[in-house]
Image 1 (spheres, rainbow, N blue to C red):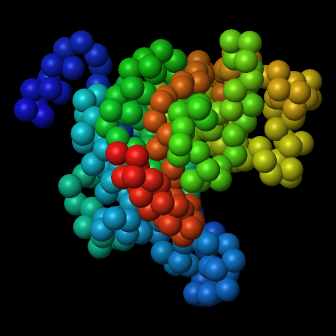
Image 2: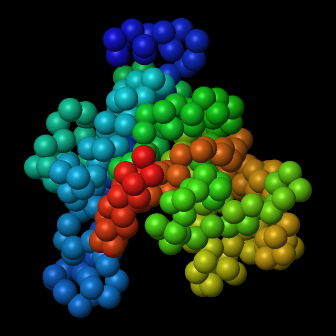
Length: 288
């Protein structure tokens, strides 16, 4: 049945391959276990790779793999990360590739693997820490991202509904259709790496996406232009302007794609996030 569905979809739409970014952030976590540090900041246990952290009985990355496998628009899947740890965690149903030192290196490692197999089209980039994402949401994103060289998924705050407040995440204001709306940037994207001229700028832009950090404001203003930065502060910035600006910065056709699933922003960065997701599940069960 699964094969029949995929073949049927493929007749009408081009399927894409996927790279799961499961690389460890080298040097980010403390070398020694520190109880006070974990209690204060809720960080993942020092020395533990986020991708293989157990959530609902399975490594985080396994949930993302299963979501991609259930999608009707995803063909081949690879995981870029610490291959030794991935193997120890039992990740053996997809190809695992040894991670590089940067996000862009990890993207290119996955893309170059597919190129050696004869695949040179767009790839979906999925983080390893969004365990609640579903195959339907991935299909929605892929279908909406048929145009453009670099498509970034964002979520409208309104789709959180009764689940708003489970995760305290930063939302940015955008002027759309005459209304001021709140959106959250996700780490889910579809890219054609060979079409991106300035790959280093992509990495730099992702490092600035935490606009709530005042230390980033001067650099964000530099990239957007001070007038545009003040437009943002006055709640007058639009997606159209951002697409035009970053298309120029990246040297490719950049698009912003809205998807409806709130789970795209349910990333598990901290220990407390697991507790909040359990609260979310409890709320869903009560509502049902």
